[in-house]
Length: 180
Image 1 (tube, helix red, strand yellow):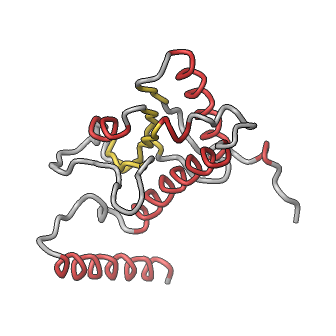
Image 2 (image 1 turned 90 degrees about the vertical axis):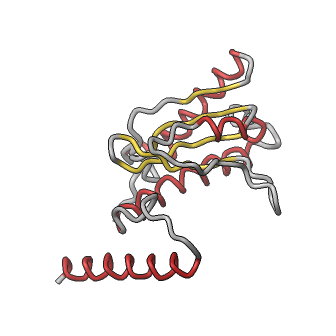
């Protein structure tokens, strides 16, 4: 069996935009192009067909609040601040009826990506790859359990557990029937 060379692996990400907020124009442009290039390369290994786009922001908290999620919700996205500080998120969005993910990245934690010799380069690359993995995970979950994500709001934890278990059981049984 021959190993597929990197150049032979298909790029899975569709056309997408990278926006930069709050940075000097030249630095922002450099970072945007770099992130775009890395996302395309990562898509050879991580399925990013449902990537909606990428936002890099100096004001990460404000950028999360500004994401057009494509559906009505009163839930306000906020970065984690308890045990760890949230610095990136793969936000679930709906575009033309399809569940996708939009990456929002804190510029302070991704800025070193264009500079491979920077001491924080590896962390920046890991952060980007980690968020890309969330894109594939959300897509895979949505395909395995259609209409489960972003659909049902439960009154309490007990109802949520019961409802999700029932929904996953139905989806599993449907998959079993298909494979017979």
